[in-house]
Image (tube, rainbow, N blue to C red; front, top):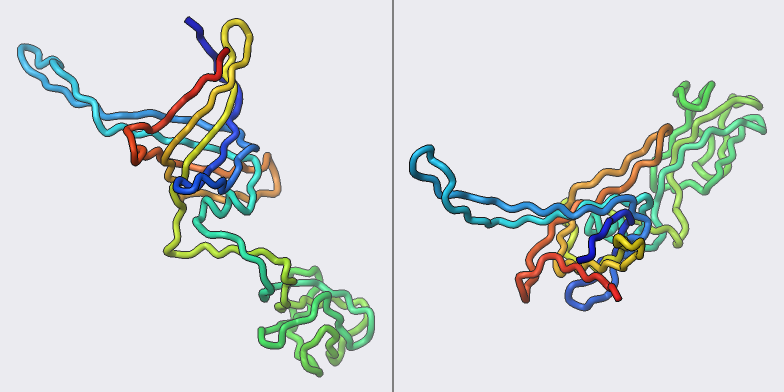
Length: 245
């Protein structure tokens, strides 16, 4: 009888359960853990009120995955949304050092349909005197009383290029259900690695996740928390195939 050890991550693909088409590949995971649970109730009776008969039910299987990296496809899987290309207004804050008296030049062409604000500043973050332009807002703007070397905060909007990809997290859109196929390696007692294939016919991605941002420490992984559902056509929840010679 062969025995195995498991010390390798699983590469995962999530597919459309109807068409079988891949939706996202997760191949930079740091952990992937299946957890199996069920409820057991007992008939008790007699002296000492011991357990006499047990019934198992309510089987739950969860899969927790942590990915070191995020892609547009995997973020779309977590949110239920997708990225779309197109021109859109985006915010820009820049700190400009005046190089010509009374003239301020922006890095981008500002949108006149959006508000624009200008403030004197000493350090690029403190908001000083509000400036009112002497000319209509454009990429080059005139301000009375600006001296060479002064710093100005410009807070405005411009049109991002049509190569921009944007995703919206909606209040009424949630992650979907997928077919999971994964591959990893189990090692037997002879030191030989055996490919282990995992199949989950119905995997529900849960809507809770976080995007961590920090200036120190290790980069934070992205967590996928999933519930395994019963297969529509059978009682299967998780299938494991060992490709051993």
